[in-house]
Image 1 (cartoon, one colour):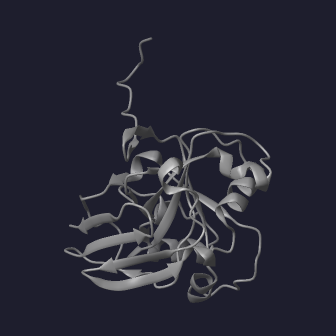
Image 2 (cartoon, helix red, strand yellow; image 1 turned 90 degrees about the vertical axis):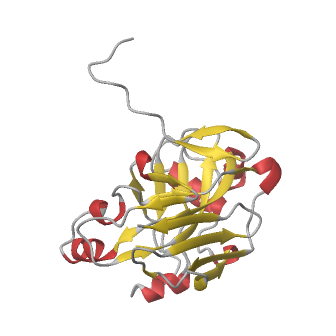
Length: 227
């Protein structure tokens, strides 16, 4: 097979003890921790989850330098548990949903908050506030055979050694199985899909020179530097 232009590179995430994981799509859950919903000015009652997406090539590996993005003065961090799917399907029952999971990782949903806020005011899509270059740093995946299915444990982010965000996976409004089940009722899921599951409270701005360390108990830490 020949193509009209060079074929784009396949985006992958390293896997602990295994071959790289090819990424198909990146789904993100909005406001999935009650305290974060409150800090963003929203009612944390258990409304149905909502989703947005990031382009696949926004993935950044750990120990990378992340360029401060253009067109923003409010570049913010959001630490998240990332779910990697090894199987797919439609209308997956909650009790079957975890069977789709290949593994878990620590991720960052980096956000141009000022662009996102302006888009919200004008009832426009968030794409340029969320889906810009280098906006999805991700640590190596730990397969389910090693990680199990984490449903509790600390999740935190440090900036220059100081804790900025801190929560517990048990605080998720919609847990991993429920999120997969609901999302599979909106779109067909496939192997290679990633789901960023939401962030706890404490989101805030970073600047050039800041060193970010993201952690979820039992997983591989994520480390990036803003340049």
